[in-house]
Length: 342
Image (cartoon, rainbow, N blue to C red; front, side, top):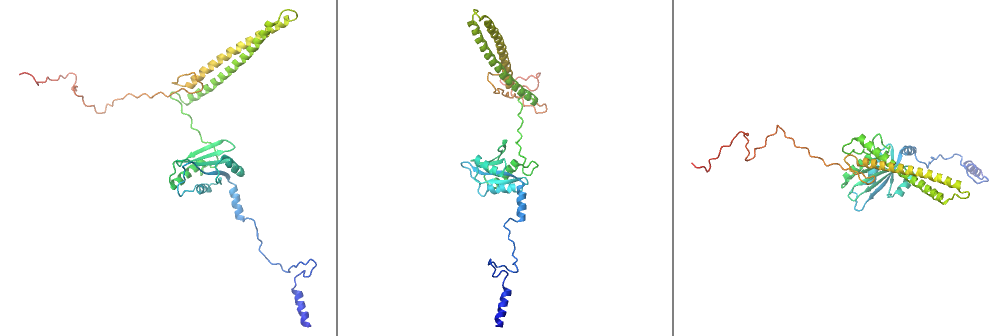
């Protein structure tokens, strides 16, 4: 009996709290220490992601191959651009795989919230063309074209050079995408840069003068038409009854409008003629020939005139030609005795 009581007491002491409770839940006296599992990313991953997000996204398309184009064996376009842009501290590569069309690139750029896109294409002679666009914005900013890439090592070298130059990688202007500076037009023969700028300004002003003169002439035609209508009304109005005063009023309006129309017509014709003459003279430029055309440049560079040959006094004198006496004008050649009679 005592053994049964002892066994029952041991069971009571070993039973956890809540044994036989109304809710049926069993709670341990000493909770088991288990490690807390976190489903989120690690701290260093968050820091690395934050660092990458600080760089501005740049969307680069896949390499579009034209008919007959082929990437050299052993070359990998995607791996190359990833390696080139990996060291950039300003730009973050967003590679648009199998994306060549404009709408596809726009969607990728909108998702990354960037306006800068790079289109890449290879022509049939294995030249790669890179186009840097700002959409929406200024459109095409820069363009680079590589020489024919016929080997994998040349592919890697030339494409890296073109991509670095296109994006300004490693320079102070990295990530500052400004259009390439356009070279200033060369002035034509016979004028310097200042004269060229003055001539272009003259073309612009004279063109505006032609347009203004045409507008005045058209306005004069309109006023003249109204004056002709008033003159017709004046002729159809009689002095009889109560139309006398009204007839004189119409006559005065017709005369005034006719005078204004004449002034506008003459002024417009003179302005258009003078502007046209000045415009053609400015467009032709120096050594140019004026034509009756409009807008086209009729100037042609004159053919270069060959400079006269100058003799070098230090140079060797050419040998005397046969039959020419080189001893001087006073030297008389002795007569030949050949064939003479004794």
